[in-house]
Length: 163
Image (cartoon, rainbow, N blue to C red; front, top):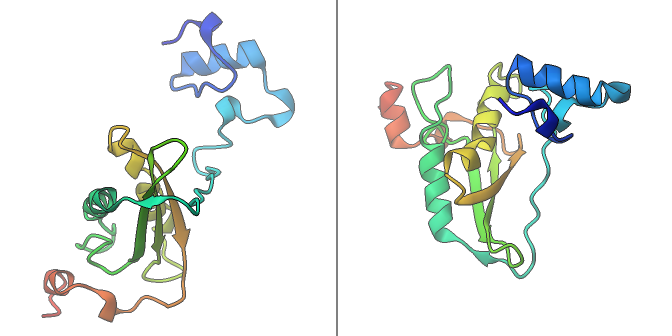
C-alpha cells in the first residue's frame, strides 16, 4: 500500500485503504473521477493517431495477432481472430516516441452481442500483457461489412463442427 502522504491526484487506488487515503487527501471534488478513472466499466479511451511519417511495424503486428488469438469469444470455442472478427491490424513506430502503436479494426458477431464490452476490453488490454513492448492499441468497432460465417477460418469452422 502507498503511504497516504505519497498518494498523487492521478494515482488509481487499488485497495480500500488507498481509496480512503485518496479521498481523505483529495475528497470528491465536484464528482471528479477518483484517480482519473470515471468507473471501471466506463473507461474513456484515448484515440491513437497514426502520424503520416510513421514506419510500419510488421513484427509488432504479428505479436498483436498472436495476442488476438488468445482472446476467445466467451460464447464460442473459437478465438476472435480465427472467428473473423478482426478486420485489420495496423501497427507502426511512432516517429517521436519511437514506441510501437497499433489500431485494431474489428466487429462482433452481432451488434447486440451481450459480450461486446468484455471482448473489446480484452483487445484494449493487449499492451498491458506485452510487457511494455506496445504503447497503445486503438480499437475501432465497425459493423460494416457485417460479420458472417464466411469470415471464419477453416480452423474455426472445424472447431465449430462446420467442416
